[in-house]
Image (tube, rainbow, N blue to C red; front, side, top):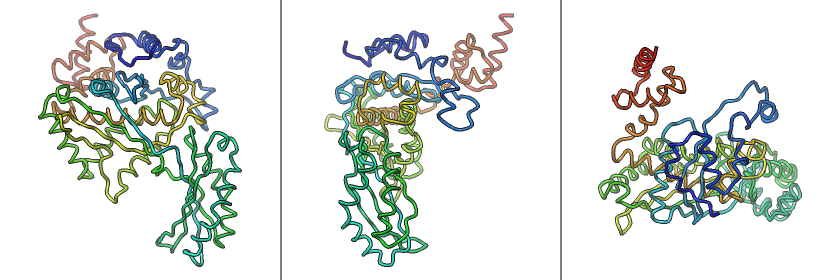
Length: 424
């Protein structure tokens, strides 16, 4: 069976029924997703091997974004997030993009960079050239640290060296470029950098200090593009207003910060669900937003000749399928299996598509009915629970506070007291 991401009415089922439907749609035995059940997922003993001084677990809901077609393949996308409306918004935007073929992606490859910092170089420019002359020797030494990576077609591919003026004097910075294949790459490049440091210091006649990767992963960019039909967005005026909102974010750092936060709502949720490093990805994306010396939007929306809206996004995504929590965390393993991906590039493509979809949904809400209307309606269940409603009471309390247009904890408490009074 060809997997399909179209699951209309999924929200009308219970979590257990949804898991079964999602597994069937993905062509999986439901047993493969059992780790998504809190009783079967990450245990306290598992957690004790992941981080230090473990005392418990923090649960995060995992929802499934539907309707995604990415590079011609349907994907059911797991998203780990506590924020209401994120999963629904991404799914709705993906439904619109699906009408024009879904999301198309491209990437620059899987190259990560390790930095080696040199201090006290007597002749900084001469040092730079001596290190470049030793390129082949240094690359061979780096590859010797990870024969497995080399056997998979990866490994050290280049070095670059620059002089850097700082407040403590001129420093020489060597960049080691490493193709990390399907790994996130931190451990591989850090190991290589530390192994190279003594030889670099010897060649330079200087002292090495920091030897570590950079999360500014600008050699590991992923791009996503989609066309959103004007009629599905709400017409020509909505398209024009989204374009104007996009131009605002491109020109103004205050708006760009919130605009990019909307993108990260989608990106971080998938990164977290698949056991990747959310902090590394977020640092990379925000540094990319400031690459031209001012903080700007990561995406752009513009009208095409047909009057439809074209959305584009470019972000650095240092994610992988090898090592770390992606392999050690049972829920992350289940999420990766559900996605049906086999390479880090496919994972990055999925993440970028979700980021673009999330961004489009937020911009459309802002340009049309306003962000609060839909968000607060979905937030009503959380408000009901915060007011003390039990599982069997949440739906009724949420429906009432939405109908009355008073989605606040204090009013939810009044409704809950009234409901309990009637039933006593």
